[in-house]
Length: 364
Ligand code: IPM
Ligand code: MG
Image 1: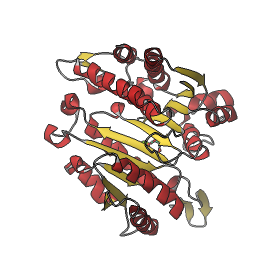
Image 2 (image 1 turned 45 degrees about the vertical axis):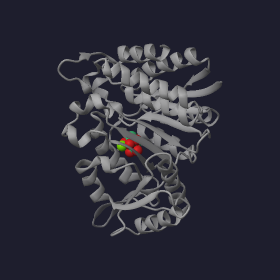
Image 3 (image 1 turned 120 degrees about the vertical axis):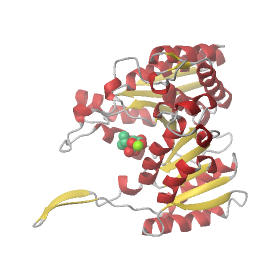
Image 4 (image 1 turned 60 degrees about the vertical axis):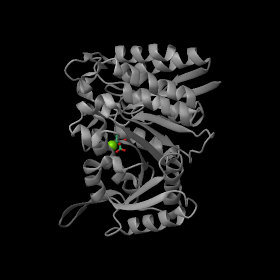
């Protein structure tokens, strides 16, 4: 099959991890006889330097007429001034909003050979395997008013957490659909004891649950959820939350897998169902790691696994996705590690070599 993919390397380690990932994608192409037509675009700091804005119209246009977008990372100290008029992050936030990518899937899986490289006791993280669904185009990130102003008594600022029932229902539905294909347990995260938007969230979650009598729905307050993720992470199968809660909880959850360098994500514009193909953007959950940039150090696995999610959700290539995931597991089983997951007795490799090893396994 033929696919049009937009590739946005971005900043910091972005270009390196994307290059390693494209190598694996080429291996998939050869092995399975597909054709991926790749178009490169600018985003983030790289786009600011070149065009003055973080999301150039060309990038948006290309992204609106392709099957999927593969993104590295954006941001860095060079563009970090809090007074700055343009920020690299505007690029990714703009893409999410303009492409309608409301459902952000962040799977967290602790691979057996990596239980020793987490900060938690192996018996706590053993068998962790859940998907976090984070709402991505609403809440505090985009709610209006959102501004800073001067008053007689000093400066003030406001952000707004707002949700419509439609915004809640569609993302909760994604949680139910995923749970249906797994262990049939959905945890809906909110702060319904304090926030009005959370009380609506909970009510809508209950209403949507009537369409999924086979899935068990549990409500959990966000603070309790932060604790449970560390205390008993195997409790979870699928979680769904609003945007900011999901941002924070998924960084926390990433530590269960050993490193942020292991965790992929998919941002989808629709509800994934068996056999369907949905437009999406795929990126690692980690940032641009500017201190590691250009050093051939960064772990490309999160981006490679994001590409596997792209094959699954946007290309409808489940078997190919599994092949990439199995290749990652095999290379780790053989003892190859990037710096972030290195342990005694293992062999340290760079970004490039990790990519090549995985591509080699895909070719078989
Ligand atoms: C993430 C990141 C982004 C977010 C930043 C880079 C804007 O932290 O994808 O989790 O806050 O959503
Ligand atoms: Mg984040």
